Image 1 (cartoon, rainbow, N blue to C red):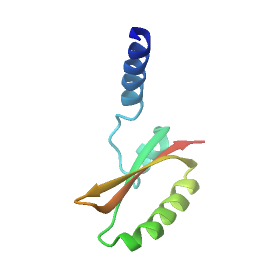
Image 2: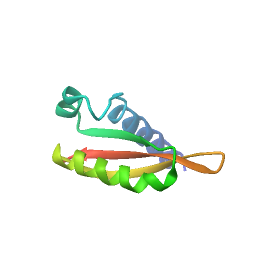
Image 3: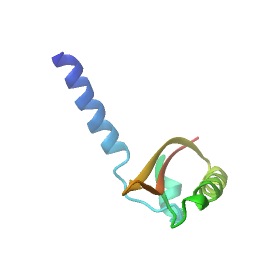
Image 4: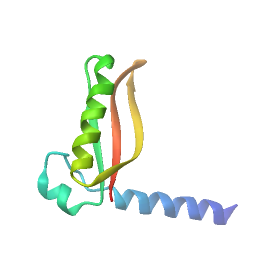
Amino acid sequence: MKSSLAALLLAAVVSTVAVSVPARAEDPEVLRTTSIQTVWVRVKDPAELADKINRTHVEMASKGFRLLDTAPQVENGDTVGMFLTYVRE
């Protein structure tokens, strides 16, 4: 049990270090030098979310990134955005 907990804590620390670079998708210097990039897509109307995600996928793919993970942001039961994590291919 202790070894499992230690491994989990180590993985959390390594993950935090790997994605701790605060960055914006439109910053070309960050995109050029960072291998993991998280982008936040925010919408006022949840019906627009899929379109914004698709446009973000195309933009990031053109810069050499592929989708790694997604996480919705929900406030008061409403989806207000999505965190999209990409990794450089």
